[in-house]
Length: 407
Image (cartoon, rainbow, N blue to C red; front, side):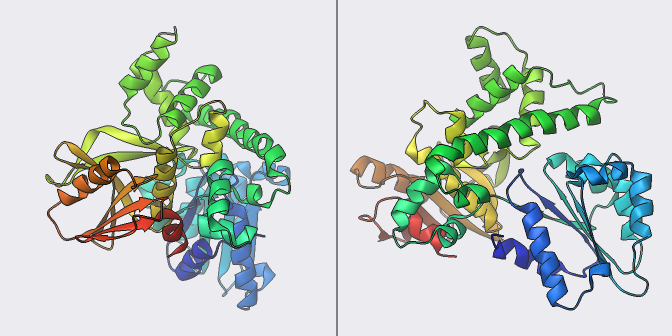
C-alpha cells in the first residue's frame, strides 16, 4: 500500500479526540488505503482487532446495512465494554440517514468515529447541521509530487514532473507498469464511475427536493465538464458556461447549468475558488475560478487540446496549497490579478505562477501585481525555469519543482 504519511499523521493527531473524523475526496484518491494504514497503526499501538470495526459500503456483503437502523444495531452489538471501539465507516454517503447513526454513536462513551465519503454532500447534510463543531474534515487529494517521486524513484525530477503533469496523480496511476497504454483506460473508468454512479446516488437524495433539478442529461453533464476542464485558471461564471453551451447549438438555462455544475463539484472532480480583493479585504462573489482535482484527468477530458502549460502549473500549485493546509483565494489588486492568496495560521502568502520568467514582458507582468501589494506578507513567483530564480526586492522567484519537493 502507498504510504500517505501527511494524511496518516493528521488522523493520528486526532486519535481519541472527541470529534468525528471525516475523510473526504474524489474516488480512488486513497481514502480506504489510508484508513487501513491507520488501523495497522492502531494494532501496533496495542489495540485489539475486536476494538476495530470497519465497514466499506462499496462491498456487496454490507448491502443489508444500508438501512440505518440495521447499521446501528450491527455497530452497537460490536462495541467493546470498558474499552475504546474504533469505528470506520467507508463511503458512508451510500447509507440513507447515516447521520442518525453517527450522531447516536457520538454521544456514547469510548467510541472513536471515522467516516469517509466521495461526495461533498456528506458535509452539507444533517451531519453538518446537527454536529456543527463536533467533527473535523480531512479533504484528501491524489498524490503530491513529493509522494509521486517517492513511489517512482529516480533522480531526474524534471522528467518525473513532466510525467506527473501528463498522467496525473491518482495513486494507482503511479504504479502502472505501462502508463502510456493504461492511464487513459484507468482514468476513463474513474470518470464514468463518478459521472454515472455518484450522480445516480445524488438523484436518490434529491427525489424529495422539488427545488433541485434532476441530472438526467449525461451528454450535457459531460459537455459542461469538458468546458470546465478547458477553463482551468480562467474566470468563469454560470452565464459564461450557459453562453458556451448555447453557442454549440443547444439552448440551456443558467439555472440548469448551475445544477449541473453543482453535480460536478460535489464528487470533488472540480474545486471552486473565490476571488479576494486584497486592497478592500473582502471576498468577491463574481468571476471566481475552477480547478480540477487531477491534471491527468484534465488531459483525459481534453485529449485533442494542447492546453496552456501555465494553467496546468497553476492547477498543480493550487492543489499543493490545499494539501499544505492553506485557505486559497484568487487575488485582485486594483485591476491586476494575483494567482493565489494563501492563508494559514493567520498569515498570508501571495503566489504568482508562470511557465517561464525569461521574457522581459512576462517578468514585469508577474512582478507588477506583487509589487502593488503594500503589506509585508511573503510574495513568491513559481516558475519552471531555473535562470531567473532569486530575490527581487523581497519577491522570491522559485523553481516550482523545487518548491513542490520542499515542505
